[in-house]
Amino acid sequence: METQRAMFTRPLVLSIFVSVGLELITFFFYALMAETSHSLLTPFIWIVGFGGIGMGAVLGVLLDLILVGRVTAKDGIKGTILLAALTMGVTAKLLTVNFAPVFHDLSGTNALVYFISGVTTAIGSGFILGWLVFTEEGGRIADKLGV
Image (tube, rainbow, N blue to C red; front, side):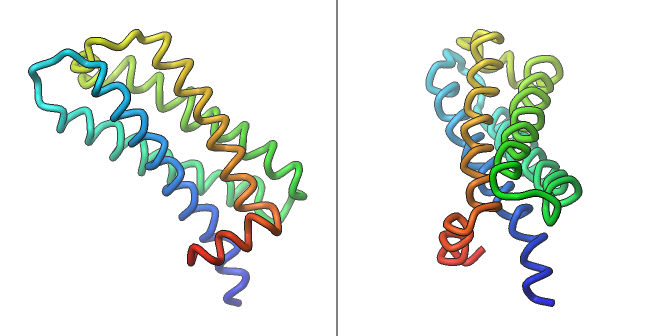
């Protein structure tokens, strides 16, 4: 029973951690480029809170619903890359560019560069996440991390 529970909670927890880590890097990179006198609290909440925690949770649930227990390691990594690119990359970055008032606070940011870098880093994060969730080696590392 414990193994079954871990099989479904691990992708969710790791997805949130990977997504928050990715969005922290994104925030610090673009906050350093921004030439604004506005507070960076609102962009931080939007990018790390909504983008990191929210999209990480969505990605984790999608992994559980679509891939966990159904695919092999190689297909799991490929599927995770695709889902990460769609959730943490395309969806999160389009929401930020089009709806978030914070994007205007990061005035030094070009929307196309932000979008492309977001999708590219999401693909890399998806590979790491897929490796941690769907391979034996990654599973051993996740065990050592206590996830």
